[in-house]
Structure formats: C-alpha cells, structure tokens
Length: 194
Image (cartoon, rainbow, N blue to C red):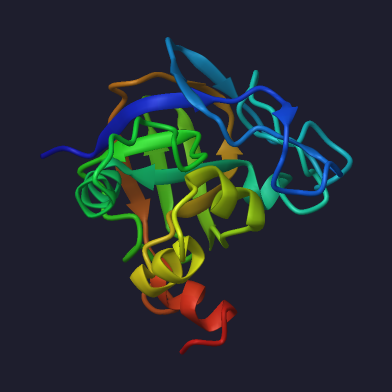
C-alpha cells in the first residue's frame, strides 16, 4: 500500500473540562475537505500555534510552535485501538492533524523528511506526549498507562516547505538519518522508560 494522507483534521477551541478551566482545547479534530494550507506557525506561545491553517490549539504554552506544527497519527493504530476499546475512533480522534495510511510513523527516525503531495516537505521532530486533556478526552480508565505502554504515540512534524495538503495526497520519504532514535524510542526515553 502506498503511504498517503487519509484525512486532514482541524479543531476549534472548546471549553476544556480536563484542565481546570485554565485553557480551552482544540483536541476535537474532525476531517475537512482540502486543500488545506500548512505553514510554519512561529515560536510556541507567540505565533499561530498550529501549522495547519484553520486549526486551533488551546494551550499554546505546551502545544504547537514550529517543532510541533503538525501532529500525525496512523489509521492502522486507530484501528487497533478501536478493537481494544470496543468503540469507533474517527480520523482526528486522537487530536491528530493528519491521519495517515500505509506509513509506519512510530519506527520513523527523528530528522526524517517526508514530502506530502507535490510540494509540502516536513521533518519528523518528536513524539506526542500524552496530557491530561488527552486522558480526559478518551475517557478510558487507565488510559495514560495503556497509551504509554503501547509506545506508538505518533509524531510531530516541522514544516520545511509550506503549501497545501489534501486527503489522498501521497507521502514520500525523502531522507532518513542513518542512526538515532525512532519516534517510539524517543518516546520511551523522554518518559524515562528506556
């Protein structure tokens, strides 16, 4: 199967019952029709927040910025979680901007560069670390422990070449570092589990 974008997902700010009312949240992301513009959002807390035009981030102190411009999660892992949790998980449910198919995100090395569609280029920067908003949003007892133990968190992306992305766009790996941690490795290291 060729790697591609299953959907581009955007969220709007809503009250966040899982963060003591301090921040709104944009975790409820839904698929939208493309093409959707992506561009560097600027520094965390100072710029646009999300690198996906039309997307909202509630807590810009801890989310967004150039190194977390886009969050990508693979449909295959959503399908696994659907079976495990016994409920439907739509594209965007984990708060991802891009739901992919045919792309093994979690074994991708940090620093890998992908082309999406004809022009957009992104760099894999860091794993997603789960937060209380994510825990509350999913609403499963022991969710953070389960998600952490799975060690398949999806990846944040930096935008190297801006442009437009649509569902169905192919994803091509342009370059991969010869060594260094994968998304799953860096996730476990960051959480002190490796």
